[in-house]
Image (cartoon, rainbow, N blue to C red; front, side, top):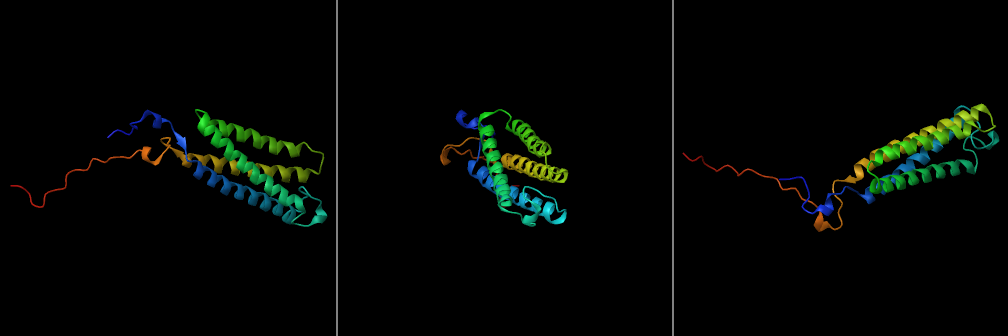
Length: 175
């Protein structure tokens, strides 16, 4: 049996939006946790001032929460970008990869251009690099799993695959 749909309108690949956005929310949680862990390592282990003065302690001030929330928002924006690219471009993975590499490069270079302590520049750049890479890799793989072979508008249009089953053997051989 052919693997092609009977209805030509179903031949266009689609995306399972529910799975994509569920993965996007999970990616946002991961990105926020990476931000928190990165700040805890920078402040607690290496005593580097990242986004808050050293006197605010290992946890820092509200900037830790802000940094984590911004990382989560960036992950959701990346999911939205991937969704848009998946339905509007011929090669969404390539465009998404380039956009994420360049956005991550900006997030890494920006703190390095500030006039603050060198250790704070490097720590912030490294945290941004890890967050950007994690978001890019997770959203890319998650979007690949959320792609559907056919765009479906109703459950009745869902393609089914018919398997050609051989006839069951007779109970006794004919002789």
